[in-house]
Image (spheres, rainbow, N blue to C red):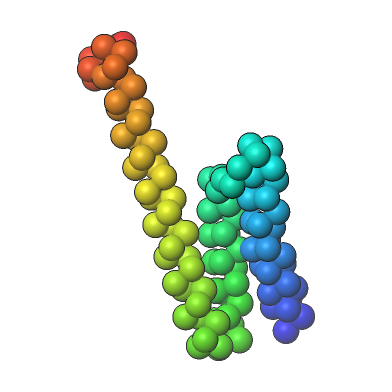
Length: 102
């Protein structure tokens, strides 16, 4: 039982760290930003909290963390889709047009 309690507290601490990461990134840029690490930390903390919630069999906690994990994954998918699109546009602007070796 103690191991599960340690996991729960660790997961909550990890999950809370995402706000510190977001705050520091925003202070550095002097504007509100959400760095990609925010989503990775959210996913890791959320998944661990979901694991803990399943173990303690709390349906409210399970529902909340399940939705969160889905949202974090979806945000990462959108970020990588946008990066791929931007990379492709940059390649086309540089005249590379997908030609191998360029």
